[in-house]
Amino acid sequence: MTRDIEELIRAAQELRADQAPPAERVRAALPRRTAQVKKQRRYGLGGAIVAAAAVTAAIAVPSLAVRDDTGVAATVQPAAPGTAPATASASPAAPAQEPVAAEVDLGFKPTWVPSGFAEHIRTASAADPGNGFGPVLRRVWKQNVGIGDPWTGAELSLSVFSEMAGADVDRSGQPIDVNGAQGYYSPAQNDRKSSVIWHPAQNTVLLLSASKLDISRNDLLRMARSVRPDTGVTGVPARLNWLPDGWIITGTTVSGPSPSQWRAEFSTVRNQPVTYSEKQQKETKKDRLQAAGQLSVVVGLTTDAPPGGTELTVGGRPARIPVRSDEAGRGLLYLVVDLGGGRLLTLVGSGAGLTVDDLRRIAEQTVVEPAGLDWLGR
Amino acid sequence: MTFEEFVSARLGTLVRYATVVTWDPHLAEDITQNVLVRAQARWARISRMDAPELYVKRMVVNEFLSWRRRRAAQSIPLATDTLAGHLPEAPDPSVQRDERDAMLRLIATLPPRQRAVIALRFYEDLAVDQIAEVLGCRTVTVRTHLMRALAALQNALPAPLVTTGEKP
Image (cartoon, rainbow over all chains, first blue to last red):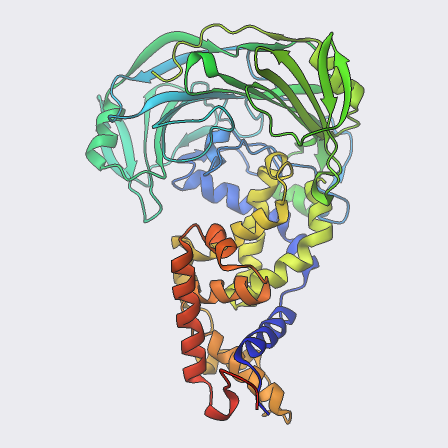
C-alpha cells in the first residue's frame, strides 16, 4: 500500500507534533527563561549594558535594553496563577516606579548621520527601579516613517542613559576611542545589528545602534564620534491630565514624517508587587513589580482600532467604542475619539480593573498641544 | 486576551507547531520559551493585532531560521543514529507506519528552510503566498523550497512507498 507523499508528510508531521515537549513544562520554565534572556540581552549586543543589580523574571526593562525589531517597550503582563510559583501579593519590599518625565533633556545628538536618514522618533522610558539603568531617551533616525506605528524598517538610534547607577558598560565589543572616551564596537553578526557604546561622563552611557541596516564600521564610528552635547529638551505634544489610581506613564513616543504629521503615544501601566517563591526569592533577592494592567493612548492621524462600535460623544466630540469579537481582542477595551482636523485619539487597554468609563475620563482630560515638533524629519 | 490567557489557550498548539517546524522537540522547547519571553514583553501590541497567534508563530519560524539558530538547526537530529533515539527500534509491523517513519527520518534531512516551508504548507495548511509573508520572501522562493523539498523526499523514499500521480 502506498500513500500520496503529501499525506505521508502530514502523517509524519502529526507524529512529530505528538513528540512535542509538554506544554506545562514549557510554561513552568518561562519565568526562569525570562530572567536568562534579559540577562543575555544586557550582556550581549542588544543591551550592551551590564546590570550590576540582580536581574529577575518579569520586570520592565528600559526599552533600549530589550527593544528589538518592533521597538516596543518591554513591559510585561503579570504571571497568571499556575504559570510560575510567583504569587501576587502586597509587598513593602517592592520598589516604586517613577513615571516618565513630561519633558526630558536631550543630552546628546549626532552632528552627522548617513545620507538619507532623518530623525523621526523620540521615545522616553521611565526608569525601572530594579536595574540601575535610569530613564532612557532614545532618538531614532530613519529613511522614512509613516503616520502610523513607526517601528518598521532600518534605523539608527542614539540612546542616552543619563542616570545610570549600579550598572556598567558591556566591554565585550572591539575597543575603540570615541572622542577620548573608551568605547566598544560590536559588529553585525549576520543580523544587520551593530552598535557602539561608550561612557562620555559619570553615570552617563551612550549607545548608538543600527538595526536592519548594513552600515560600515567607519560610518557607524563616524556617527558616534560626531555626537555632541545637546542642551535642548523634548516633550510630547499631548498631555494626560488624569489616569486611574495607581496608573503611571512609563513611556512616551513621538514620531512622524513631518511636524504636521506627528503621532504621540503614551504607554501606561498599573504595577503590582509580586512576591516570588522561596526558591525564586533566593535567586531574585528582592521583590519586583509587574504590570497588572496596560493602557496605550495614541494621538495621531490614524487608528489601529477596529471599525464600528457604539457611538457616543466624549467632551463634545464624536467617539466610538469598537469591540473586537475575535478571541485575541475580546479582553481589550477601545475608545476612539475624533479630535477634529483629521486627528484621532485612540485608547486601548486591559487589566487592573480598567473600565470604559476610565477610558472616557482619560480622553476627556487629554490635552493636545502641538509644539516643539520641528525636529521631525530633520 | 491577556498574555496569560493566550498561553493558557494556545501553548499546546504552539509547542506542537514549533516541534514540527524545528523537527526537534528540544530545540522547539527552547525556541518556544524564547519567543514567549519576547512576545510577553510586547503583548500590549501583539494582542491588538488581528491574528496574534499567527504573529507568534511567525516569531517561532524566524527564531528558528535566524542566524543565532542556524547552528542549532543544523545540529538537530539529521543523522539516523541520532534520530533513532526518537523512534521505535523495531520495525513497525504496519506498512503505513513504516512509510510514515521513513518520512519522519527523511524530513529531518531537509535544510531548515525547506523543513519550515513544508511545516507551514502541510501542517499549518498555509497557501504559498501566506508562507511567503511569514518567511518574508517571494512566493517564487517558497515554491522553489517546496518543490525541492518534495523532490528530495520523493527521491529518498524507498520506491514502493512513493506515488506521485494517481493512486493505483
